[in-house]
Image (tube, rainbow, N blue to C red; front, side, top):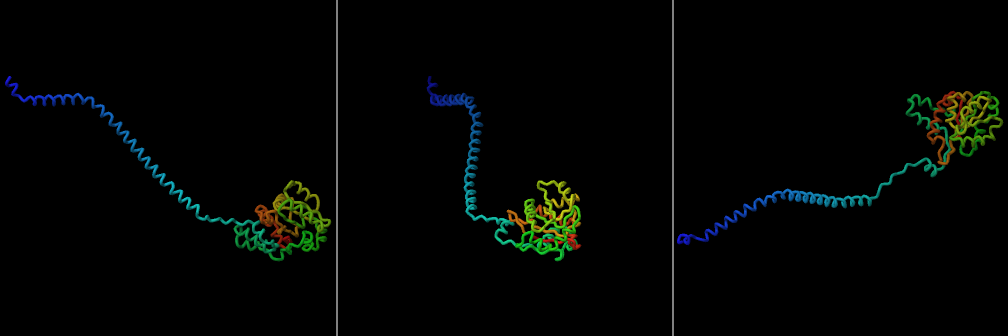
Length: 291
């Protein structure tokens, strides 16, 4: 009993407490293992949160940039815009200026400009016509009949001498079918007993016009350059008896365009000049007048 009492009792109690604490930690360790499994879930949550935070930052940056663009656009809108100059059309030019009568130099300039990139320099010189190839031009005071009486004073004699079939002595070139009809009506005071024919494509077949030219002698032809070219190509009309070619130069349509201001008519007119008119002028057989 004495030995037992001699031992320090509090030391045994300390040891028992430590051993009990170790046993408790050993028992708790297997239960704390699931905590390791929850760590990746926490990491996932952290990464998701960081991604969301980055997206928010990007969105915030974008939201900060957008108002800057709007400001630049607003600044641009406040700046005065340069107005583009509209190209003046023929109608604009002529509506603000008085019409001028055409002359032989106008036709000569038109021919040289058209063939400037199509012919050589030597060939272009050959296209130049002498002043003797032209009739006096209309000064905008004449009607068609009064103009023709002035430039063709011997018309009655010329009319009687003409006996060539499929040809005309006087060829009047204009821009449209309606203008052709108007000009034929204006010829009544000049033509006398001469026969005039309409030479345009609208509502008239080319075969009918060829038959009319072959039936009898026709003195005057009035029409568009497109149909006249077509008749020459089909040999329904020839220029053997041609002595005068009058161009409806000064007349203007509703858009204030002349015959040579309309691209299609201009091209056909140049083809007509090449088909034999220019050669006839050089040989002093054909004279050109600008009405």
